[in-house]
Length: 452
Ligand code: MEV
Image (cartoon, rainbow, N blue to C red; front, top):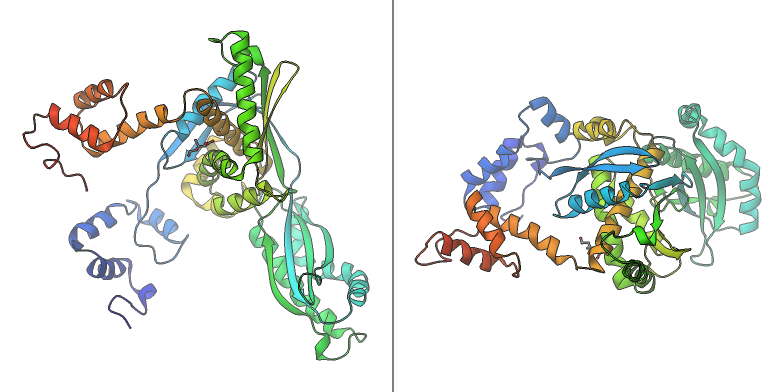
């Protein structure tokens, strides 16, 4: 074993884990130990809850928890919690929300809520024999898992469809049982995966027991059983619209029309060019992920599904659309969002629970509408900046504040620096030099510790 490897790490206590890490990977073990333990939750019971979410935990990794107020969706006003480390995102969502608040707010509508799970297997026999056998036992396969689906059914969900698919053209012997689910207010991952695993075992047995398929070479070989994070039938649409003349009260009618057209072109570009589409959609996910995280949902699942949906035409495109119709500006977003408001982290993460309380304990459908609206707000704010002033102005303002924090500028120093850089390009070295000057440092730059 190498010098820095270890066996039995997971069995060490938390302090034991930290000790091994700081001794092996840091030059200043005491300081690092102090820092890591400083992020432990003050309440041991709460820390235990957090530790329970993962493995080998040694500390917590704090992220800013912000809110976007004034988010009007379908006539209801929300204050939306957002967990994100990127400056300007919450500010952009807030300003777009306020902007649309005075123009009728966001309209949002859940178009579908179906989720998908798959049993992938191979079978060596003739496809038509398998299909006719599948038809004859389809009902039994559903009855086999009735115990698992009973509770979900009592809540109005369950398995909504089952089909056998033939992929033998792509890979010899490869078939799939595709199941469609309604999981109500839960994201449903555990439910779906449990049903799939039970069904794959029952399917294997039923094929084995069928006397028409003789011999071991007629056995089903289950490759895997797992839900799909691609949910093109679990879609929400968020939209905004207003008369073009109302886009910007400071602009003339012609200028507003020019703005609308430029905005429309910017969205079109994201439908034409995948390079732009990736950045455009990233901006949408800036908003979406932040709310998904704040509400204890799985942002990796949401990203995977969203990007796959963006590529459904065969080329990767914008998730949002813009149209100018009858002198009206229309901007909307269609996105798959398989999220939940009960079960999983949503109920056990203390802050996720608070987030859902802040949103008025929404149903999964309502949360889909909120998340999509924030995605659209984010996209609107980004595009409006991009096609007018550019985004660097706003970004650099936030960047300057971060640099000032890092260099421990006093309030007065910060004030003077902000004025100084109003019309100048912000850079770390520029700000540091200006602060050195303010502080009357003889040998500037070297006097300030820049890496803490
Ligand atoms: C930055 O995080 C997101 C943007 O690049 C999105 C966009 O370009 O549309 C501003």
